[in-house]
Image 1 (tube, rainbow, N blue to C red):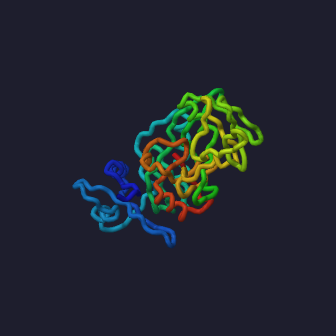
Image 2: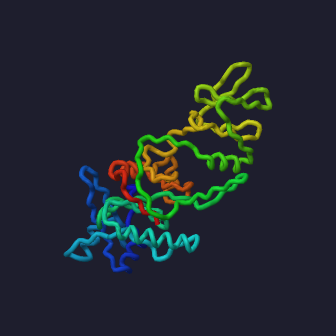
Image 3: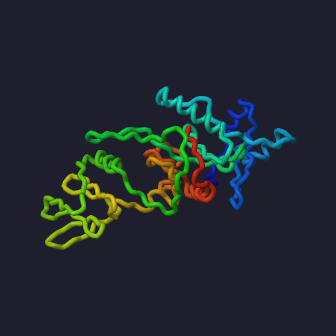
Length: 292
């Protein structure tokens, strides 16, 4: 099944109510492969948006200015509502190549002028808060305008502090930070230390490196490896590509594709691998991203 999201009957109904023809004209950059957007007809058969438009009118073809947004939205606060309206207004006024992230729909669209180049489902921030000790973190995808600062193939995830706080909280563990050049004694006589950029166990003078893809838990404590060590780098967690929006927010792939369409992330926007690959290839650095 094609993962580029379809123009659903509900979305088509909203478009009709707004007096907007439910057709998306594709105008891809040179060399890009077209990604036809399809919709489900009332008879249950799949037809292209262009053919549906042709059934409606035999004359002009029309491009939507942006994917249709539902009439109602759930806002966390007045400030959130204002951010939505402000960002949506900015997105409507921008005429160049741009990326839109529609939080209520959990969809991403790429547009150039009036042409919709690509639509895809996404996972967004789960909008929850965790508290650990004196610190707290809220995992949301904030509305507003950003831009693609850089792109990366085969990115490696460096877990931030909140990752370890979340794991420790869920498992009922204490949390401590390892430091290069310092040894931590354990209750069984062994010790944790760092050698050659790896965290490992020291016993009777013998160093044994710990697996880099496992949390470091001993004596009821989750030990946080320092930045720069292999234990603080996790390949594959962000999929094959990422587009960096700054301040820790990314558009990226994921090995957890079953979460696409859900509010399941810690703030980033996750996409299917084929969709983030399309973005990586066709959206240049500097492209504005409107999240609303």
